[in-house]
Length: 420
Image (cartoon, rainbow, N blue to C red; front, side, top):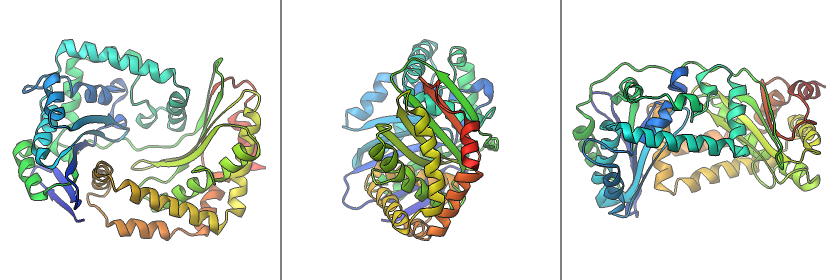
């Protein structure tokens, strides 16, 4: 399998990887315009725009967009994250030109029909309401807000209801005009794809676009803090975050191995001590996520009102213990899990296309897969223990609590335990 790249004269980037033996392809456009690129009055508009992409273009109605892909047995979808918005499809090999034509159409030619805007506004408000009714969804929005207070990166992707109610057609068009230039777009494809044919198609569909200045996202600053939302729920929800490396920092591999050993599976420390040995919860996990210039190591658990205090304290005790006795065997297991998860995921052309787009967004190139594996293998027990010492001692922290949390300790109390 060989990764190939090309950049059009206007800055539009194409990356692809042919995967022998496949008869299908994953293809999409990744736009470097997500939640953190919004001004405060725009919060939620990137996600609103993603919804509107499927509501009709100058060439196709909403139904025709869906039929064009589904008539050939494919599917089409989109998502918005804090750093990108993606529009993608999965089709058979012969239908790649059709899929790219449809994706180009919805990205470049949305009509923003006022009637459709009102319909989709209602759908998004329902989505916001559903998120607020899902404790293990909304608590991560509150944790993000506590981690990056008063910054674009700390705001929700869906946006607040009052702003969603106010967005107009002009607002949507203005965001497209500011952020959907050729230099902000990456065409990524994997599977049964022909790179040279993709370049020719891209030249036809996107080569006419005029370059425009790129507006960098505001630099992020992990502030830390606490948010508590008391409510009569069955469970108390506990979410904790620590500042971690961004994805351009080689220490991201250490952070990911640490979080896997700490709470990444059934053999992890948090699972074994808090669920298996003490029975304090059903769900507990740790994970590390990264952005361009910052990242977070996150721990989540759900427990009873009576046990939330003990769960929080034992969690901090486990953080301290990991700094002193994390074993080479645990690091080796976490390293193996990380490599296996990545390699198994890359057997999917959809996952591979997304990875290609993400790497081009980060580095403007795709490092060889073996380089990534080598960086994972290079993480030592000393690296992991050093990172664990920072988490246990000095890394800035954020805490979010939701549900029957009256007996839950404050972040200040947990910080005192951390310092003891």
